[in-house]
Length: 210
Image (tube, rainbow, N blue to C red; front, side, top):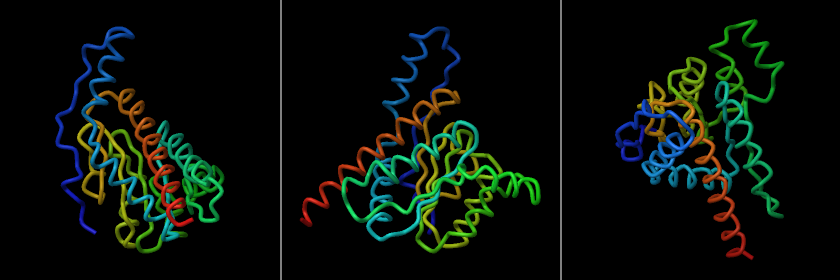
C-alpha cells in the first residue's frame, strides 16, 4: 500500500526555544495539542478496529520512551478493550522480550532487533505500528521495510517533520514540534485517545450485534 498523503500532517512545526518555566512549557504543550493531525489519528483508530474485527496481528515497537509507550499501548489494546468480548486484539510489543532483543543485538546487530522479531509473525494486512520521536531510528526503519515487503499496513507515530519513517507509512501521525519532551507527552495522549476511541467503537459494535 502506498502512503496516504492526505493523512500526513501539513501543519508547520512549533519551535519551543521560548520554554523557560513550567507555565511556558504547558502553554507550548497546549498549543501543539491543538495542531495535531486529528484526521490521521482517527484513521489509525479505524485501522486498529478493523484489525481487531478481522483477527489480524498488531505489532508495536520503539526506542527509549517510545519503547515504554509501545508496551503501554499494547497493554491498553490487549487488556483494556476486552469488555467481556470473546474477540480480542492479537497484539504484541516487540519491546517486551529483553532476552530476544539482546540476542538479536548481540548476534546480528542492534538495527535488526525489531525487524527480525517481526519476520517471525507478520502476514499481509497485519498492522505494524512504529513509534519514533525523530522518525529516523535505524532499527525502526528496518522493521518498517520488512512490514512493507510483507504487505502489512504500516502506521507511524513521530514528531519533527516525520523523518524517514514518514515515507514508509500508510498513515503517519506527526506531532508538529521540535521538542522531544513535547512530542513524547503528546504521543502518550495520542495513544490514550486511540485506546479510548477504540474501546467505545468496540462497545458500540458489540451492543449493535447483541
